[in-house]
Length: 257
Ligand SMILES: Nc1ncnc2c1ncn2[C@@H]1O[C@H](COP(=O)(O)OP(=O)(O)OP(=O)(O)O)[C@@H](O)[C@H]1O
Image 1: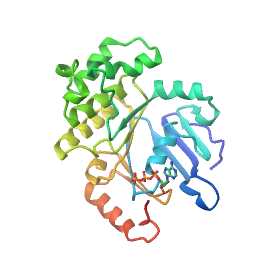
Image 2: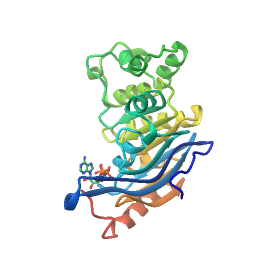
Image 3: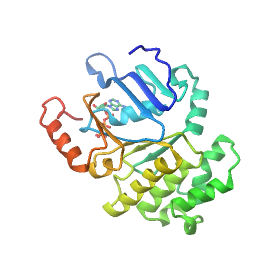
């Protein structure tokens, strides 16, 4: 594939020969070894793989939180390496949402203030109709004036998702969004992410270790040693678990950090 590949309509995120090496010389660690992937608008992709296989690095570089060592990241028609830090920050704030395992809410702010924060940071006037819909969708209408510490883990993650949705981003990157939640709460959060894709045609890319969580996705991509080694359309939880187990038996893929 040409390194100057232009974006195609309908593709929310494209990575081309994406590579990321940490450190240099004999200490260098290759986290991503040239990944090519396209993520269509209105799809939900789960990224899986052994510990140290490069999942978080893929997410961080594709989301413009970290610069790759080489290769390209396209968000719609924008190639991130061509952007200055200021433009990259602006693009991240307006077109990308983030949900992390640790929620990353601001403890001193109320639920409502946390949800409005991306708009305030971007200087965008809130659209009250949309914000009401977001709050309703995540089921937090009666918690708006609480602080995060007064909420359960699942409720805090739903605040984080509402915050990610506030700007109506094209893409939402999630790193282990259910890693800190019990099974039932996790399924509510996953159903919410599913509805974001089905009802708003936003694109979700989610790193997870959990085959059940991954089964909510339209596609499961498996990394090993910084490369995509499986790309499965709509696998069930059992098929995912089976493929991960097979991979675990390969000596190279079994190496983690
Ligand atoms: N800041 C860093 N400095 C040096 N090496 C790093 C850094 N971040 C990640 N790595 C290395 O890059 C490789 C990929 O790490 P990454 O966090 O992307 O893997 P992962 O698949 O998300 O792992 P996990 O499932 O354990 O979170 C690992 O070998 C890791 O040790």
